[in-house]
Image 1 (tube, helix red, strand yellow):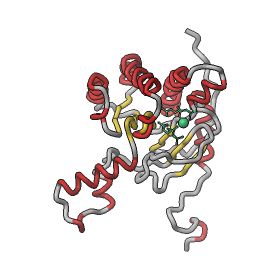
Image 2 (spheres, helix red, strand yellow):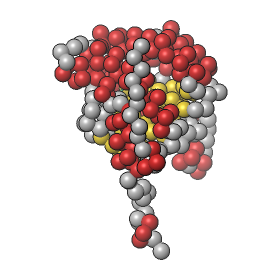
Image 3 (cartoon, rainbow, N blue to C red):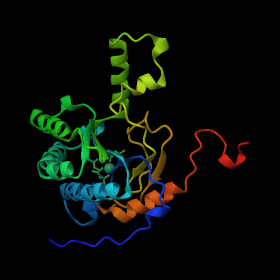
Image 4 (cartoon, rainbow, N blue to C red):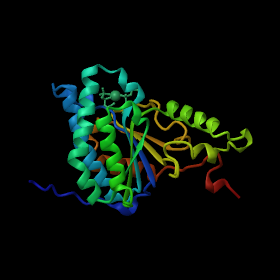
Amino acid sequence: MVVQKKPPLDLSKLKVPTHMAVIMDGNGRWARKRGLPRQAGHRAGVENLRRVIDACVEFGIKILTIYAFSTENWGRPESEVRGLMRIFSHVLDQELDELHAQGVCLHHLGDLSGIDPHLQRKVLGAIELTKNNTRLILNVAFNYGGRAEILHAVQQIIADGIPPEQVTEELFSSYLFTRGLPDPDLVIRTSGEVRVSNFLIWQAAYAELYAAPEYWPDFGREALYQALLDYSQRERRYGRLPEANES
Ligand code: IPE
Ligand code: IPE
Ligand code: MG
């Protein structure tokens, strides 16, 4: 195996987000540019995920949320959906031990009941195995949609008989798949697209957004570093005035 040396990066310049979320977009276009089938793009995307997880650990990010499969992605051709499910299953087989050894704690965001039972069991097994790990929380949004998540929360709140005056933002957040976790500080979307596509629409209310030009399989450690440098220069105001203007 060829071990590639990582060029040193000046981490002292970084303000590192606690929670970073990524819309991993552009696998299909990455493949098309090379005259390859879309499935090859998805495979390259998964390889890149390994690089980005390593970089998140290196940079000190504590929570990484990735958009792997949306509720709308079922509308793709059946062969592509089947190919994606095969890749997810394969990744769990291939990468789980290494993720566990690295201290990654896996969470799932979304509706598992819509997934093949065999894959469901694998996901639940991976969550159970890694539940006490603390180095990096990896939320995998898989069969996930922000609107579906909000509807699910509303239905649960009603089913629990919570009176209206008790439905606060905190309570509502505790009914989402991300319960107990802080909101994302930064949402990155690769491939130059600038839209949310039903991702974390409640949680990202005050996230900083970053559109990376690279297709996801090309968005490696240095591209992530650039995104974090950009984030480090942002001023988060939450509707207030810049700090210098406050008296
Ligand atoms: C993102 O890449 C992966 C998934 C949505 C599963 P795409 O498959 O959307 O790639 P493009 O956008 O067609 O290039
Ligand atoms: C968003 O990408 C979903 C994932 C990355 C899993 P899409 O490629 O599905 O989004 P649209 O269709 O371009 O909005
Ligand atoms: Mg896309």
